[in-house]
Figure 1: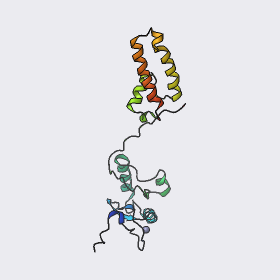
Figure 2 (figure 1 turned 60 degrees about the horizontal axis):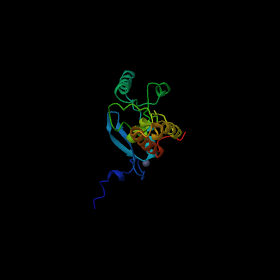
Figure 3 (figure 1 turned 180 degrees about the vertical axis):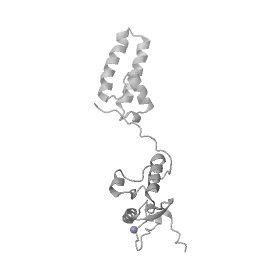
Length: 185
Ligand SMILES: [Zn+2]
């Protein structure tokens, strides 16, 4: 019988007497942020509440920790906590618990305007219809009508070029009409 070595998903909460799954981790200590204790949700919350990250440090050391954290890691305290709690700041990070990725910068949040959802074919189709983002299905429809009038072979003496252009416009139009990435209006 080799059931003692629990697999990660079978961890049991480390709180004495608790039989729940230990699904949440907390750093073991300030000097050892990379090994963890494992708790159930309730006990990880209690553990974090009791755990004083800066216990035993004097004001200068705390200052140094905070400065290090703000310059090369993310802050470990919520805004305003320092003022409320004086020099002792508690860590408030119950679920994320110290950066998984560890150190380094997080990528800057990208500006999302909906255009990031467009497929390359949809982008090309917008170009063909001479539309820029943001464009709606209503824009597509009215631009299509305009372009069909301009490029219709009948309006161009049956010119072969106009016919080709119209095909391109038709294809772009069907691509965009079928798209779920354009707002209706
Ligand atoms: Zn527990």
